[in-house]
Image (cartoon, helix red, strand yellow):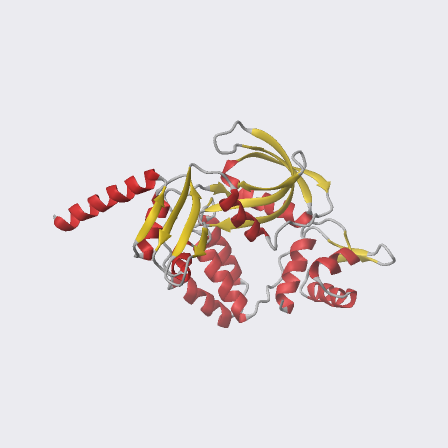
Length: 318
């Protein structure tokens, strides 16, 4: 992590305006107490008013108020911000379109001319497609509130409407947010069920941050993204799809992505497995692979492949 990126992370923690013990800040940023003190001094040099206390329980707290000091970014970080804010206008988070433009304008106004020109080039010369028409939209307030709960280890309560299930009330320890495909997920430990869960943000109802802190638990996966992906293969869906594809496993995996599993059966054949609510996706995958396939299950998928084949044959014939 670069110095400026680390200072931005430090500032993000301090801007909660809570009192942070020095040891906890050092642990979160993975730096020594000496490095933390130097970073605090850099923030003070930039105009941020950071109060500190010494001793065994010493720590830091950002004073409220004051003007926004200059923003220091490295070249690659400036370009990343420009690209991220520009693409946010076409994302799945509702209410960010206008805010992204405003944020980009403010950030550019705080940069030196050289970086400002680079960011302007990225923003002005990039075209972003419209968001997926059938993708669920979520509120920016929900996303940011859950992100803060993950960062601050704060217990959250919300109503949740599972697939084909009655709404339930959940008490969770938020861990991470994951953006995957066209959806956002919250990975959290469900206290009432005593287990880890992933929650689709578009199914979360009224959210309450309780102010209660918790000690983070160890996630039973290498990371949150892996945890969410594993849930797709284990979670029961309407259709359990399988097919023997006459193509190498690498070729099938490239088309399937993280939505299922591929088992090699020799060098030129592989078996594809995935659980889906709709048959549109496996049809697209098989079409993208472009190879002969047999032992296709379930029968509804064979019927759908036959229907699509007749439809396109009619178009070509016409």
